[in-house]
Length: 341
Image (cartoon, rainbow, N blue to C red; front, side, top):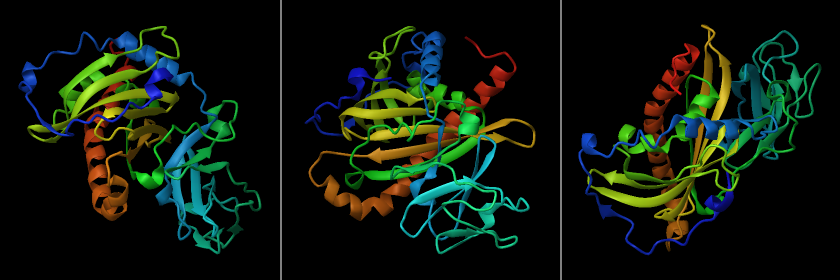
C-alpha cells in the first residue's frame, strides 16, 4: 500500500480537543455494508504478496541488552539475542550445539554467550556447530532473518516503514500473543470500520474516506479514515489517518492531519510456532511513535517520556485485549470452514 497516503498534510491550526456530540452506542450508523469481506480479503491478499525478505520482528530494541540474553521462538525456531559491548545486537539459534541446552539461560560475559550447561562460549562470529543469524536493529525494533522458514528471496535488511525522527518522538512498544495466525492479526487492522463499534472507549466519529477496491492499483492501496480519539467521555481529538501494508506481516497507521500529525503506529504480526495442542500462536508487537509539530513538544518529550510510556503501552494493550479475542475467533472459524466471506 502506498501512493498519496504517505504524504503528511500540514498540521491543522484548530484546537486539538473538542467536545463530542455522538449518539448512544446502539444508535450509531451501521458500518457493516461498507465493511465488505471482499475488500478486506483482497487487501489482505495484496499485503501477503509483498516481499519480507524473510525478516521477522524479534522484540523491541530495548529488550535486547548486553547483560542477559533475550530468548523467543519465531516460526518454531528458538532464537537467542544479545548485545556486544559496542552496542550492536546479535542473534542466533537458541539451542546450544553441544547438548541442546536453552541459550536463553546463558550468561553474557564480555559480549559472548556462555552456556549455563557446560560453559561453551559463543560469539557474534559463531562457535562450534553454531552460526549467528542476520540481525537488524532499527532503533525501535530488532529483527532477525530466518531464510529457512521464510522461503523468500532474502533481503539485506527488513522493510522498515518511514518514521518520524526518533529523538523528537515518544516511542513505546507493546506486545501480546494469542492462538491465531499472522493473517488474522493483519486482517483485523485492515477492517477500520469496526473501530467505533468495538472500541467505543477509544474511538468516536469514525468514517472511512477511502478504501481500496478489489483489483486496485498500488497507488490506491490504502485505507484513509477520519476518527476522533477519545481522551475523556465527552472530549476527543479529531485526526485523519491512513493504513498501509509495507510487507506481509506489518500494518502501519500514520496520522496525516490533526493533533499528532506525523505519528505512526506499526502493528507487526510475528508467528511464534505451535503450542502443546498443535495450535498456532502469533505475537503482536506494536510500536507507537508519537510525534507533534507543536512548539515545545520536542523539548518536553525527554522530561515526560518515563511517565507517558506506561500509559501508551497500557492503551495499546487495552485495544489488543479486544482485537486479539477477535483474531483468535477468526482463526477458529477459518479452521472449521465457518468464516464468512
